[in-house]
Image (cartoon, rainbow, N blue to C red):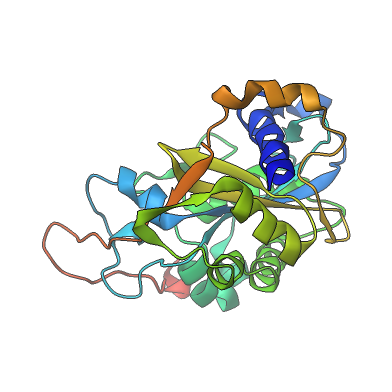
Length: 264
């Protein structure tokens, strides 16, 4: 337990202080993938008003399990490539995936996401243009980026892993950080990276080699960073809040989750 807690402290330190984006002139092929998952019970607490594009506002079929933030190509040194090509997001290319994307990869915000070329658009557009375009040569097109991410999400079902280990969503319980890390390590075979907000788990990240075999999110870490425990984003005991559905201001639960592809 102590070993797991100390190892996750190292991961948290790197996630908070060492990661940065590399501009286009310095980019090279990435080293590994990060599957970033959001916990809606925590993330949705920052929502102060509802809109039709915000998954936090679903009063029915709401996000009660981890949802996808993105699949990110990263470098071992703590930086990452971004906006690697001029390939704009085209929703028609993922039309057959929309049902799964809307359920498991929803936007949890009312704000339009920034894209690589000065515009704003869908959350999926941001993830594809900023991160997906840098996945070459492992992932070579938009459809493969989204389908591969969904496959990883289903294969490594973090919500199920934590539930089976006794870490169920609760608005009253606090769970040992080391216990959550150990549950993921035992099921996945590699150490995750956790991000918290005000003592609640907000994001959990799994890392993979280019062949999609799990790997520790930080390799070759030094025990000297264990001294930085007070600066980590997760305390020794963390909460996993239950998702509380919000509602549109008019009280209706009508959301255009299914896009009219022909109209776009």
